[in-house]
Amino acid sequence: MKPRYRLLLIICLISALGYSYWKFAIPTHRIGIRSELVMLGDLDDDHHWTAADLEKLDAILKNPAAAQNSIVWRMDMNQNGMIDKEDLTILRALIVGGGDPYAAEEKARNRDVQFPRPRELYRYVTTSEYRSRPLWAVPYPQASDSVLDWLAGVSTSMSTSSYKEALAAAVYDEAVRFDQAWRKRQPQLLPIEREYAAKKLTHVKTLFLAGAQYEQLLALMELVEDAETLTVRGQPEFPLKLLTFRDHLRDVLGSPAYAEFKAGKQDWRAVLKIVSGHLQTDLGLSYNFETLGPPRNLTHLANYLQRAEWQYYKSTAGEGDLLLLIAYAQHDPRYLRAVSRTSKKHRDPNVENHNLPMVLLLREALRITGGDKKKAVGLLDEAIRIPYAWIKSIPREELPGSLALDNFLLPGNKEDGADKSRHWNVFGGVCIYKSPQEALDFALKREMQDLRDDKYSEDAMREFFRDMIADLNGMYHVMTVNLGLLSKERI
Ligand SMILES: [Ca+2]
Ligand SMILES: [Ca+2]
Ligand SMILES: [Ca+2]
Image (cartoon, rainbow, N blue to C red; front, top):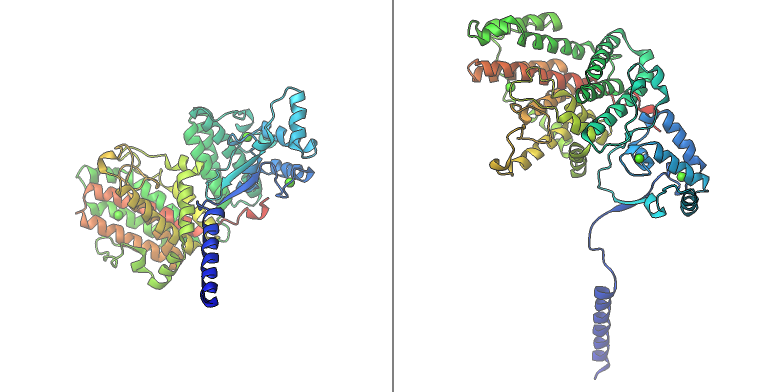
């Protein structure tokens, strides 16, 4: 054989052997799962259990609401979804034992006390797994002088295994969270904020006395959201006046004039004349609904705004961001409680069920987008469309008939589709891209067009009011929400 051929043969042989070795002997990653090893109780993230973790623990016990979710999750030593006394006992025993889990376990066993096996103090979890914040269930020393004067008499729930216990635990957690925020906000509150808060606090107390725990939980969540993210200070006046106007729209729906319209004794003009009156007195704006022009073709925000800017913000909402927001809507316990408040058809004339879940969704969208409101509104707009398609893919006959189902992740009653949520978000978006004044004008023209198209029927009139209420809620909230109010104190 010529040396040239011999060389070629050798090269071929080596290549074949190399390929076989690579193919059969080197292990390959077959699944694209990304995980991390979490050391429970390692609160300062130095991979040891030391006195520094206890210092961090003490700081969190003094100010639990300010602690980050990821840290509170690591505090749940017994992994029961609550931060309870046993978690603290386990962590302290570990540190007293010099950070050696075997020593701590042995010491506990000698005293006939159950203690986690060392392996149980670690969790190997996928990074994509949604980690709910455990509920706060340790005694709260500041309960004795809390603005929630009923809190001192409530004992911490020891379990979440029954629905009743889980609800009680959620109420306690929310109450502690509110008390923390209230102590920080209370000295700087303006008179109007005090007045609003006083009304809501009385409402919570009434629900507590009535034993209406679910409603009490949602009322507390509203207070938490107000205290942590809303302030009148430094705000332009217009968005605040929108709330007054919204309350007046609710009054009109319950007024004798509206009842007469419903009974066919009054014309639509009589009802909308009252609305014009409120627009004049609340906002100083003159509107004549009889001559009000149609809106531009405005089914979507995109048709109204500079398309390029809107598209830019929507397209920067990456797939990862969408998945985070949807995971939140599918798993966050507070959101799931809030979105579960639905009513039978026509039992929620004032759209009371809708606002809180939207407030929570926007807050999460803002967290994901780093506080950029334009991005958050774009992200939410995208997310609202996605589950809509999912629901469409389920055969109609397989959908239960008791819920608003054209978008399961979003809030609403049987009569409210995804549309109300989209409006809440879109009109809020117009406030940011344009101005609240233009958003209001856009909303009035659009809802008036719907009313005209439906020949001023009673159904259409009711939805004129209900849609306007949802629009105004979104406008007010997107304008005023401020995630940074208490965030300086994050620990
Ligand atoms: Ca540590
Ligand atoms: Ca626990
Ligand atoms: Ca409408």
